Length: 255
Image 1 (cartoon, one colour):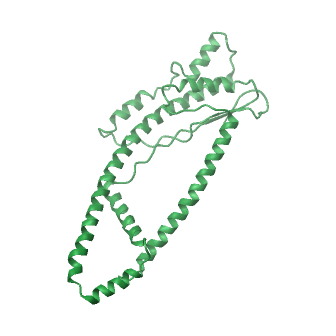
Image 2 (cartoon, one colour; image 1 turned 30 degrees about the vertical axis):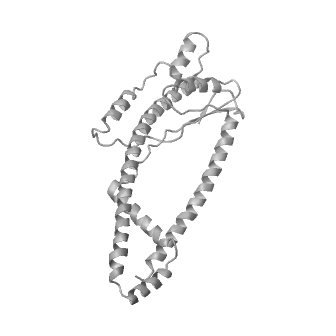
Image 3 (spheres, one colour; image 1 turned 45 degrees about the horizontal axis):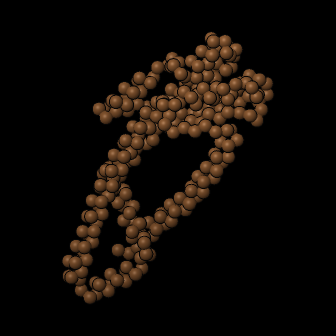
């Protein structure tokens, strides 16, 4: 949180969104990640770039259009750092989506193969094994199936299939952690909006998906989004508990 000079903070403020933390440790330099590493190296320059907030601010001061303010310059420097992190994050996200697409395709291919094997196995059991069963075996089998809760068998098959897919394809790629954002506050006229405009303009061509909106509008949108997330989390938690109950019930069934 950065405060601009001007006395006590007022309700007027500027919210610069781009959320999160440091970038995860680098992976081994396999041929697949070398292009990404080259791009990250090119983006790792720690000096102010042309068109960056700090460069624009200093240019305006040198031209006499702005009076130098150490607080504003400090904020512009922090915005420069955030811009570099966002550029790095954007590259990592592109790499992540490529890996996720490959992972999805491989998993779907293996899923279809497993489903085909399961269907062939059920057909074989139904056609050949049932022909050799006696009347008593069929009766016992029919009673045993009647005691099984409908749908539990499908969930057990689904869970076993997903576990097998994790072994065959591997775990889902992990998305990179987004950089932390900055929250600017201060009195009216302290330069919050000007600095935010500089930052937003500097993200053009760097950030593909971006949005600029007023502080109060942002708070309302974030509140609505958090409400939706909490609601989905409760629904998913209930669904997971029902799955677990069904799976545990299937383990206690006679075989």
